[in-house]
Length: 341
Length: 281
Image (cartoon, rainbow over all chains, first blue to last red; front, side, top):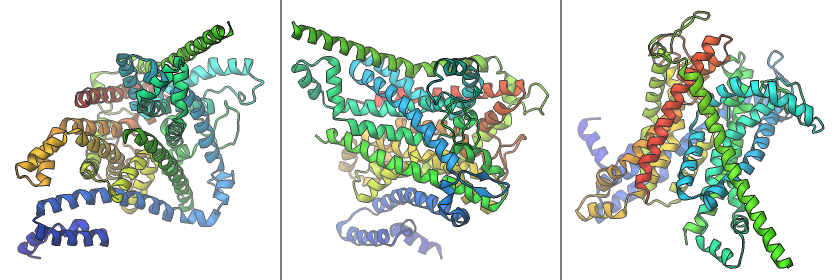
C-alpha cells in the first residue's frame, strides 16, 4: 500500500479501529455518509471510534479470559466432570483431582468473615453517616480507605509474624479453655489455620462494605430523617427507619465484600495452613481455591494437573463474576433511585 | 407514667445503639494502627541504605538488599502502564462523553465486574496467553497481568474526573468553533488532568502491591535482570519468599520491604485524597 492510500484510509475515519465488529463498521460507514452531508468533523469520527475501540477492547478482554480458561481446563472437565466439585481427594501423584476441600475452605472462611465484618461495617457506616461530625467523618473515612490500600502481602506478613503467634500462645488456648462447648472452637492450637484466615479476611473486606454502606446511607434524602424526627422518633429509631428502606443496598455491599473475600489470595495463603481437609473446627488448617493456585500452579508437573488448577481458576472467575455482577446491579439501582429525583 | 417510662427506655436504647456504632468505628480503625505500628517497628530497625543498593546475598549470609527487586517492580509497573494507561484513559473518555447507549452501559458494568475479578485469576489468564506460547516465565507476562489489573481503576477515575468538569468549559470551546474532539482533548481533559493523574498513580500503587498475579508469570529472580523475556524479581514476591524463609535476617528484610511498600502506597493515597478534595464541590 502506498503512502497516499494509507493517508486516505486514515482520513476516511480509521477503518482499522472498527475491524472488530461488522455492526460498528456499518455504523461508521453510515455516519461517514451522514457527516459528508451534515458537515460533521472527520476528526470527531476518528476520535470517537478510537475511544470506542478501546472500550470495545475491555469487552473483548473479559470474553477472552473466560474462553481461554474454559479451553485450557477442558482436559480436566472431560476427565472428571461434575466429580471435580464433589470429590474431596486432591492427589497430584495419583492424578486424582477433586476441588471440594478448596471450595469448602473458600466458602467457609469467606462467609464467616462476612458475618463479622458486615456487623462492624454497618455500625461504622451508621456512625459515619448519622452521628459523626463532618471533620471526624473525613478522618475516619480516610483511614478506612488506607486500610483498603494496604497490599495483601503486608496483611500476610502481619498474619505470619504477629497474628498467628498471638493466636497460638494466647487466644486459642483461652478460647478452647472457656468456650470448648461451642463445637467450632476446636482443633490443635497451632496459630496457622482457619481462624487466622477469617480474622485477616474480616479486616480486609471491612473497607469496601463500610464505604459502600456509608455512600448508600448518605444518598438517602435528609427529608426522610426530618420527617421521622418530626414524628418524635429518637435518633436510633430514625436510623432504623432509614436503614429499613435500604436493605437491598446493604445486601449489595455485602455481596461485593464476599466477592473480595472469595478471591483474596496472598494473605490467606500465608496464614490458613494449606491442608486440603474439610473441617468445621476453626483452629484446624484449611485451604482455599485461591491459595491452591498460588501454591501449586508454578509447580504443576503434568498437563492434567495444570488443567485441573485452571478449572479452579475458572470456577473462581465464574463465582466472582456473578457475585460482582449481582452486587453492582443492586448497588446501582439503590443509589440511582435517589440521584434521579 | 408508663408513657414517660417508655420514652426514657427508648432514649436509653438510642444511646446504647449510638455507643455501639462508635465502638464499631473504633474496632474498624484499630487494625490499621496495629498493622502500621508493627510494620514501622520491624521495618525501620532493619532498613538501611545498602538495602536499596545491594543485591540479595546467598542464604546464611547476613545483609544484602533488594536492588534487583526494586528495579523489577519498576519494570513491571512500566510494562503494566503501557497497557493499563491507554486502555483505561481512552475507555474512560469514551464513557464520559455523555454516552448512555447500551454498549457504553455494558462497558461501564464490565469495568466494575473486572475490578472484582481476583488478581490470581488474572495471573492465570496471563499464564495461558503469554507464558504458555513463550514457553517460559517472563517479565512480559507479569507486566501484562498488572496492566489488566490497572485498567478498571483508571477507567473509572478518568470517567468520574471528566464528569466533574463543568459543561460550560466544553460549550465555550465548541462556541469558539472547536470540533468536539479538540474540545475534549485540549479543554476538558486538561481541566481534569490533576484528578486523572493521581488516579493513575493510585492504580500504579495498587499494581506495585500485587503479588498473586506475579507468582507464575514474572516468577521472581535472585539475580539482576532487566530482560523482558526472562523471569524478573519484584518487591512483593521478594517479601513473600523472605517471609517464609527460616532465616531471621530474611524475615527482617521482608519487613523492611513491606515498609517501603506501605510508605509508597500511603503517600500516593494521601496525595489522591488531597487532590480530589479540591475538585469535588
